[in-house]
Length: 397
Image 1 (spheres, rainbow, N blue to C red):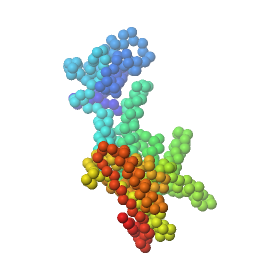
Image 2 (tube, helix red, strand yellow; image 1 turned 180 degrees about the vertical axis):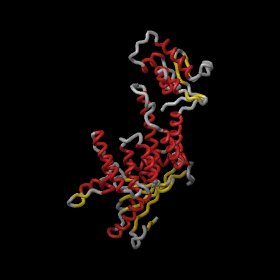
Image 3 (cartoon, one colour; image 1 turned 90 degrees about the vertical axis):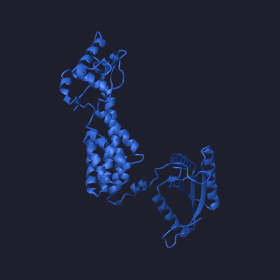
Image 4 (tube, rainbow, N blue to C red; image 1 turned 90 degrees about the horizontal axis):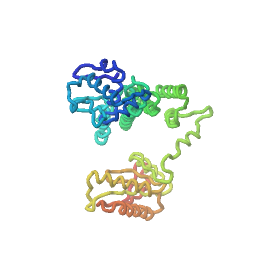
């Protein structure tokens, strides 16, 4: 519930005795620090009322509000309710603490901290989630001016849950994800993405029966309350977790659909290091049967003296190079970020000369794109040879 406390005294009852004063206070607080015209305030709060002199009416209400807030002993310059050029605003000051402001600050701090300290960011997102108690000013009804504020704080709440769950998912901390989701379900039961995180987390902790049961619950809930089926994403995750077996056996059409590529159709595949290694081990084994057909290309960004640039400059250079590789390489090529200044490429090619032509083209285009940045792109080509007893990849520099 909305509470107002001044110098340890709860003023909520005193303020709420007058509905108009109470609504005016909520309005000014919602649009705090913004000067509002009297006509706009009156029209927003009481659109059907017909006041002969709205400015005088509002002036009287502001006087009563200041008195109810026990601000009558303060001068105009010290008051939280400020009037200027005929307009009014609630001015936040150091002496005033507002929970929604703390809520916003927690979220902003968590987003900033996520860049360099994941653990602290998760904790800050958790604090923001814990602060959220449902719709902003939920006891107030019938006012359109409240809708944008409610949606805004709701988005902050959901984004806090999603960001925390994504970071926990990367660390496979599934039990903590279920905690975030269960806290969010108290306020947002119809957000499908929450249920997606929850089902994946239950499966990750080995609770497959509970994950299946929750999917059936969500499916029934959405059909009964919203008249819709779960999205294809949620259905696909369910099928990937539990399979889809028909009376005649495995559904090969479903398997085929799951194997379809969902990335850019004519571009290369960007993957992580572990997946790249697995692909190269596969290529090495194929080379035993069919001979070498793939080449590895190593791209390295340095300064002209072969030293690494500063972190910010290097990150910008790597971002530019990644974009170039994704737009210039062909379907069938594979890319991974190998080091802080390196990309490793897998290039299907007939000869090392053909592979060298591709990398020379990349080097030339990057030189043109990054002219003036002071960085140089180097490349090396390596041939993928057949594996030795299927145990490792041999690289020839």
